[in-house]
Image (cartoon, rainbow, N blue to C red; front, side, top):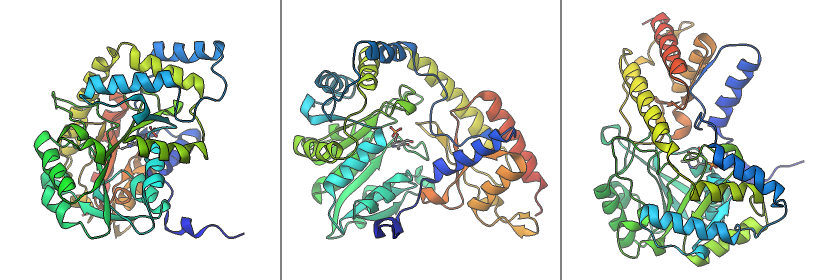
Length: 398
Ligand SMILES: Cc1ncc(COP(=O)(O)O)c(C=O)c1O
């Protein structure tokens, strides 16, 4: 058997790999402090679960249109229009099997062999791999630590070649939690318009922002940006629905139809009962979010303060999502088994093996020397994890 050459350039998900390793240790009875998972630790709100259960009894157990139930597409368009000051119609949105699937459908529908796609780093691990799977060429533009990991409009412009067609934006970001403000987004939008680029804007963390940070959806920045933007998003993070596999995209109708062609020949529709749960999520109270955000905010401060108290470690306070992305370059010279740690990959191995703390190395996010912590875990795990890391780092020579 020979596997497709398409796979030779594609890596499996590093974030899922570390979660699997931590889970295997847990299954073997080890008490692991896990900062790996990219999912809220709250249960899905009860009214959403109830809607999913009733939908089964009501017979939503059959195929639906692959882009989603008309009632849900209509409600989604109404919701995002109201919440983010957009103006989409039901046929300009589609329901996908998670936000990841929205992105996959978009890349498959848009890219031709050799098309260049600009991706700021640190990036969510799936962007470059999905671009490669679709035959495109990722062009990585590093966001400077001093600029809160964000790229500037000048950097975007400098990366454009005659083959550049697309720009992937993710604000607030996984893995850094950084969010672009209105002025920064506007400057990027001007470059996009000037060079006739098309933007894939991953806005899945739009609801998870702190200190009153004003989230702006990318198409609202300039007139006519809507026709050169596809928004990818989903229900996983806002409603704690990671396992339901619910995402969406909003784009010009021609692209929505093309993405639906890919979907209708691959996964088909999101299960009907899941779609009805999504309808309840959109139309029900969002009151639960205040409490979630307060909890995330408290943990955000605990983890940032705790990491900054470690000698050689520096960590910025991010504006959104539930990740922090500390700089560990100041500890990599320290020795483990007589050898300098050297890389973030070895550091994370050390912390998992010696301290039973699971974090994700920065290298797969395009940021060697850094690591990602998800603080979507309990206060106790955060405090105990920080304690273990301090003890483990103190044990190292040098
Ligand atoms: C930036 C970003 N986009 C998209 C997704 C996809 O989420 P899902 O497929 O669960 O909706 C994630 C999940 O971690 C993410 O962090």
